[in-house]
Image (cartoon, rainbow, N blue to C red; front, side, top):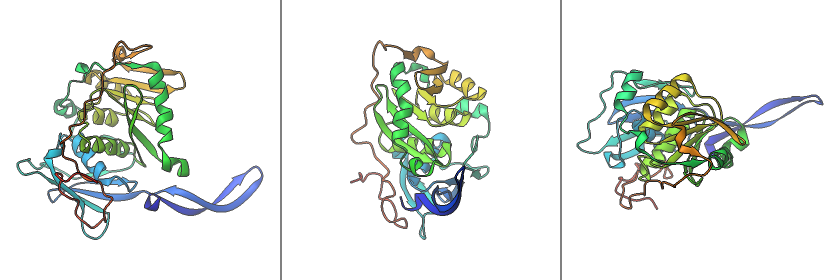
Length: 302
């Protein structure tokens, strides 16, 4: 797993005594994200899918909406601590009144106010007529857990996944920060031509907070489901957005806090996810050497 996990010595204490042994821990390291030479944020994250993380954050902050608005994304020379995003010619660079310091337990980190979230959201999610069965929603936490490769080794990561209305897994991402995991999913969707996320469900491993609801709205995802509770502000925002917000999704039960009409025992019709544009430009991932520039967006990944 490389730098995603590290090994440390621990003393394991049980009723039968104590033993010293190695244990796997999830890595948490800072990443500075720059946009056209300006520092946007320093975020604490689990290394991996850093370009998706940066792109998802730009979508969440309302700085970009489509992949063609990004020209390049690459690590700066010297390692994986600084990642620079270059916007395409003609795309206005962000006007930053301050840099954002994002912790792994971050709340509303970048947007200036809650009202700004409502003003900047580009999608009316109530127009998305996706319907889901109770069985599909109940099965999503298990599908998410099945994709949590690093959590299985460490027990220390949040996860987010994007699924179709019939329960097909599109992508699962993990991170020490639940907001980072969602940004990685949104960044992937941007590269794959899947934004806005029509007909899709965002499933998260923890609670449904305001910032996760905001990120789903900015990505045009009509359904957010969580295994734990939502906050009151998350419910208020979901109502404003026309989003279906599901909490306590466990076993055969759940609470639906908004737009419950999308959840039925037998949906009347399936609404397919937005088809991926064949010629949609993509930002290649960071599989290449960290110090090397990521190829232009017009170059498809191998």
